[in-house]
Length: 222
View 1 (cartoon, rainbow, N blue to C red):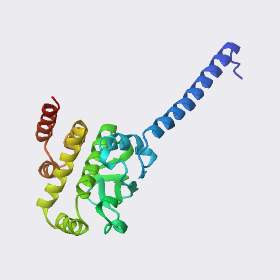
View 2 (cartoon, rainbow, N blue to C red):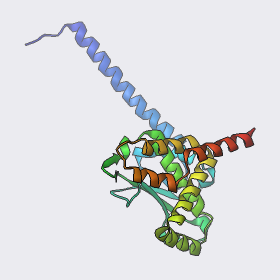
View 3 (cartoon, rainbow, N blue to C red):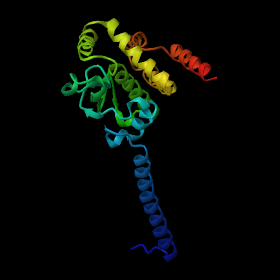
């Protein structure tokens, strides 16, 4: 039987105590940080609270808008999807509530992505894009929302207009670098089919268009 030197045991015990204290302190500080970042009327899974609140902090207009961020097993042809809650669709547009559905896994061609493995800045960009959709929805009447949904399901041009509008909202709200990170994440995956990458390039703002918008914002600020 191996007998460890007394000083070694004391040192090892001290290290373990320090690590446990650090872990508890980190968890406590994380919860404090989470509390300071709280927005009203939001339901956010713990796994993505940091990225969600960074994205939300760029949309002060949505501070009091009820939004539930919710994981789903699968979302058809998408990683995230913003939509109004049907129960409140007929309410005054200023009193609507919204879902942001988030797929736990997404399969693109032969690649399977887990939300927990997606880089933080990419998640912020994705969430920021979906919040851009909500900004768009806030300006639409109930009848207009129904018509918008029909066009989105039946017309590629309408999809393009909606996705580019959401990107534009996000960039105009200071999320340009995150939107670019999201594009890079998709377009730089060499295993993805060129046809899929071409679809992304066609439906969404290009990196060049995003940079142009960022430059215009910087000029206005000057």
